[in-house]
Length: 263
Image 1 (tube, one colour):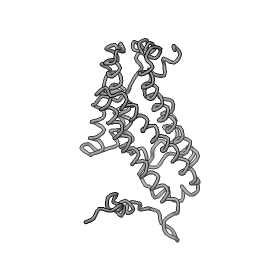
Image 2 (cartoon, helix red, strand yellow):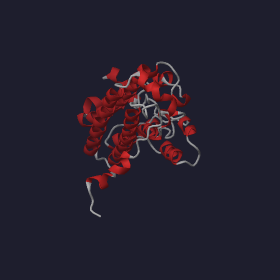
Image 3 (cartoon, rainbow, N blue to C red):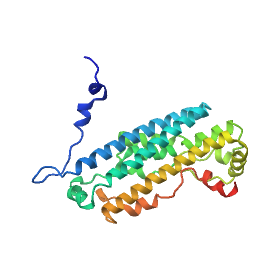
Image 4 (cartoon, rainbow, N blue to C red):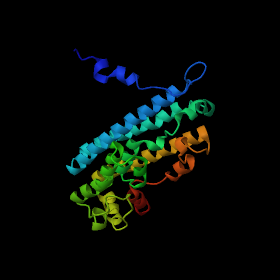
């Protein structure tokens, strides 16, 4: 069978995946299709970000800093697209969302295993999200694997050490299965690196850009949810806006932020 655009991308299968749950006199509520498409596209971007983060880790481990910068540049561009998609979702009014919200039952964005997986890879690790998935499920297995492997920050610290930055044991041997914490003992070396090594400084600034981009996405997501449902509980009984607000301004790479006052 000849390979075509449609068969290569599996377009028929792809277009069969949008299945609205709402019903009314004229069929499904109009805006539910937009809601489904946007969230399916987000899941595809999460998959790509996981793919790129694995490549970033490989390049850091190989001391391919040019390649690491290229990969970070792509991740940042994808993040901009992810943020821009919220503009599309915000064309849906609170009234139109409420017209089909009850049909979502217990489904919730809090259940996105891929986003949690990407968070773990970036260093925002905690055991709590594992409780959302049954033991032995593919989602839980993936999260357990990411929880037990070094984060991208850990890979960067080791790459910097191999490049001559004096990284103390507290930074090199930080707990792998816990969220990234600041390491005051490492910060003087980072300050010296920032002042003396433009090459490594540029790489670290891309990590700051990545951190800022994720925070921007979180902020836009919080405000989108707030303008849509206010302070109601989220779908599936999720905490909604109060929980989402707690995630704001929590840096992924705290050392790179804390050294700013010393530069």
